[in-house]
Length: 226
Ligand SMILES: [Zn+2]
Image (tube, rainbow, N blue to C red; front, side, top):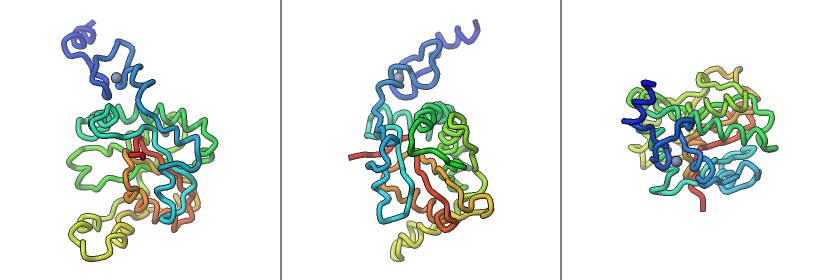
């Protein structure tokens, strides 16, 4: 009764379209769940996201759930997840995506799910890693363990922009490192990010894993596609 009353005054809004949610809806309204623009990339081993990594780093495949565009509902959803403390929307949508990935022939036999680590300073400010919440959702529906302990961001990334006159890619390569190599060596790993645009962050993330003979799968909530 009391929650009904609260919801009447402050209705919970859909994280994508901002419309009040119905009583049995959570995070994203049913209408948005059906109508947000999907890429369906997980059904194709080679797609606009996996092609981003051609000639850069060997991967098994890559996919993104939604198409990202500016001022769209998808952007609003990501904004809620990243800047409005709405961690649960990441988990919710990650959960939905996980069920779809589970049915794809290209995302089978994955051992571990790892979210792209946030820089410790950013983590301190935001209080959470948004990619971790997406990964949590995917991990739950795919029933694959999450690992947030063994891939970490080194402090080097801080100076990356200042060191413009050096080779930028050399710097990017050392942004991430592995703590416990035996945990990850030779494993099939799904890397999870919120949005993929150039793929540079994911590439940097995958580099130390590739050195450990890991098979790499890449997944994001959204991607800018042509
Ligand atoms: Zn909606």
